[in-house]
Length: 112
Length: 123
Image (cartoon, rainbow over all chains, first blue to last red; front, side):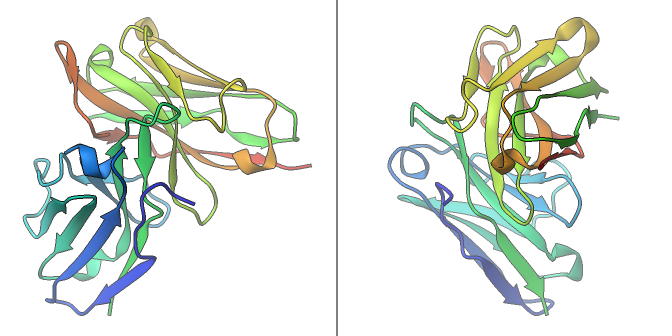
């Protein structure tokens, strides 16, 4: 059971927009802006696409955006493209003394 | 070009040991807090351990505390994970991942990742 809860799967057609949620609690998402999102294609390493809730690293498409409300962070992808099909993971710093970082269970995005 | 290259994975029996290595290049290693993150087959990511730039601060997930030891050699631009008393549930791909630090502050995300090394614990 992951500390952060994500939907197992989402899907959308090319050109559409989707949103992936990431729900935590007051010791992680709810108390920090230190939420990041990673994209992982099969057999590949994770790639940072959003950091500190809403910031994009250089080189990441502006079709990716992030937000947060209370204990839930969200990743939105607009103008879906076939190459967006991947697994997406959220992560947060945590004040839990037994952990430093927590991840969500991952969401499989299928582009129909 | 930034590279993190893990090695040392393999098949080991329960109770056995392995030492993973991660060789860094293309960036200033001493400006990065380094971490191990693992992924069980078909599962999500799990943070395992972190080590600060000077090795002064070290943290472990409860699931590996007392069995795994993280270390780094800044002269060799390398990160290590000594894994003892291995269990079946330790099976997975182990990634090294870096967090950039500037001055006294480290950023709260992993911007560099290696390709991973597979550890299989099975009899």
